Length: 356
Image 1: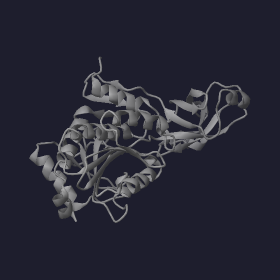
Image 2: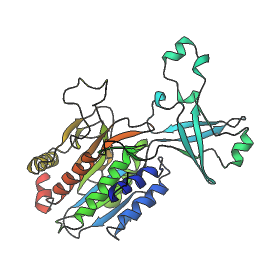
Image 3: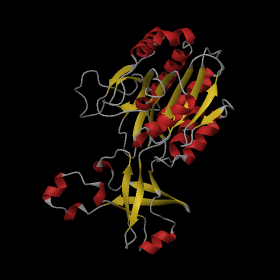
Image 4: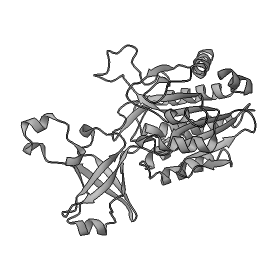
């Protein structure tokens, strides 16, 4: 299938690795796309980045996060296998027999995650999820010395491997790291659209770093921008797969972006939430309400920066996040951009002060 310009952007964003703390490559990609929209680029000292447009009015920060869940090499066995730890949240069931990419100074190496074969596990062991501590990565080295000669060092980052793909229904898009290259894309497209408007505000659009290990870059980017209003752009858990159905109003692909009313790190600012919901209804933009008790987003740091920032989470539902592959729906991306731009167009000084 021939990719259109937006799909090419999505492919570039998702095919570029960036585990937490090692976002340099994806930051470069993000900056290249931001510079096609504006030359006014701001960064923080950890790697967060945003493009700025507008000259007066309240400052609006919209940001995804550059990092994706990954791993780090912790040791090399004498036989040449790599021990590793997770960077971000992982579940043991999704790791075994998966290909990974070790990002060394000499270049990227392919590896496969292994453990004891099921044939030698006890009956009790087979019932349990294997701990990451029992796993290893096989890079085809015969010794510690040979692994080192390939360029592997303790501390090297490890990324998943799964290329971007448009599925037979072209609205369904597959990639290894929609969490959170989807948010990066929404930030870019919203900035691109808003750049053509006569804005009543100043918009900073981009992405943070190290979200998956504690929302660290959200704090530094917010301290750099000092926003008056913030939107964290992320993905949420889709509930439309077998085993998930039966919930009331399950979050589904293709039914609109998720408006985060609550998660473990933030309660959406009530008045800003009402503006977003009202705008969605006025523009006939589909949306879904997301109340999540088990996770958090950069909004958790945005809303606590300087003297407090009215903050909202706008996400897209995704299947199989925090694994080697996930699936989203293209309409949800587009509707997230539609909603975000419609909201930002009306956030002038008067609207901002009414939020307080």
